[in-house]
Image 1 (cartoon, rainbow, N blue to C red):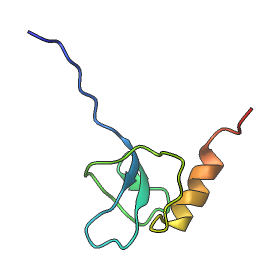
Image 2: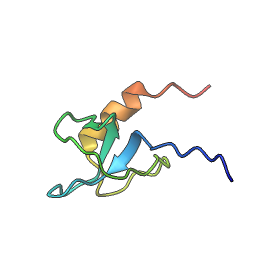
Image 3: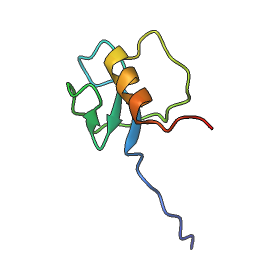
Image 4: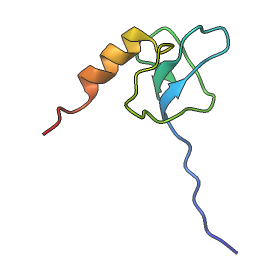
Length: 68
């Protein structure tokens, strides 16, 4: 028997039903503070997509540590 631990991703990009853009979520709340989402999320790959929410992108850049 395997003792695998599966962790749910709690931070990343997702597109709620009805949203035209992808939003960045932390603990189910979008960084632009407009959306609440409990669906599956994709980790940030650093590539800016044309369908990414600009407010979420700005907020994400502010919270990421500066490169050394």
